[in-house]
Image (cartoon, rainbow over all chains, first blue to last red; front, side, top):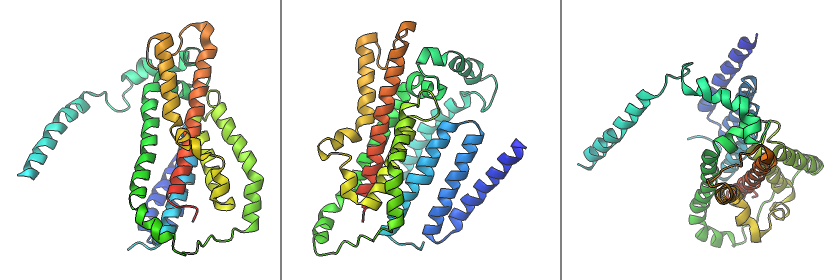
Amino acid sequence: MSQAFDLLLVGLLIACAIAVIRTKDLLGATIIFSAYSLVMCLIWLHRGAPDVAMTEAAVGAGVTTVLFLVTIGRTVRRER
Amino acid sequence: MKRALTAAFLVLVSLPLLYAMSQLPQHGSATSPAYTHIAPRYLERGPEEAGAENVVTDVILNYRGFDTNGEVTVIFTSLAAVFAVLLAGREGDERSASEPRARTTPEVSPVASFVVRLLSPFVAIFAVYVVMNGHISPGGGFQGGTVFGALLILATVVLGKATAEKLQPARIRGLLQAAAPLTFIAVGVAGLIMFGDYLAFPKAAALAWVRTLWLIVIEIGIGVGGASIISAIFWQMGGDR
């Protein structure tokens, strides 16, 4: 059961990673990237590393996303 | 010619590195030192020896304190790099910005504004809790600092930069941003003076409270520094506009 949950999470992670690369809309890509971080956070938590999970949630899903959004706001939204 | 020299140099450098790699224990091998005696010792004696219930804190701040010292310095350096890159083109930018380019601060919805005002104290308390309780439960300076930095970003977006910046008085902002490496070095030098080694923690069982106190001091330093650096990068990138 636990193994199946891990596999599901890793599958989701890979799907998110591929989606980030393929999305041409950078705003969308940023949001998918933050979802990637959340999945990664769940994996850390499930593997028994709550300290890393907290960092991943705060930095990966939170601060990095905000910095990306600021950058998009000051540049362009579409990938060329 | 230059390219060939570069290639030769790279090969020359990579050979000893690759050789060293080949001498490392097999990845995941049960006989590597990490599994035979290092991890068991950390788990068995960490709490009494290093001063924190949370073994992760023991490892990153005490056993591997030197590594973490370098790590917080790297984070501070990243802030310096952001400042160097973004301030380089700022001179001309500032002049053109002083033209009546109307600052289009978008109206923040009253709902978002109210929710952020309502939640801020709780987020702040949570951040302090994560920092101060890092030696007992999961968490610590890095995590709590990031939570507080996120709160500063939220406050900037909703309440404006001026309000958020009041939390970091301009006079001591530089000190706050360098808080993590500075506290680390202060604790390290204190260890050098009192116990004879940089970052040495007292070993006597009676001094367990000193070990815990030092861990908390470092955690607070990392937390303050982390929060200041995150908000400073956000402000420097012009996130308030």
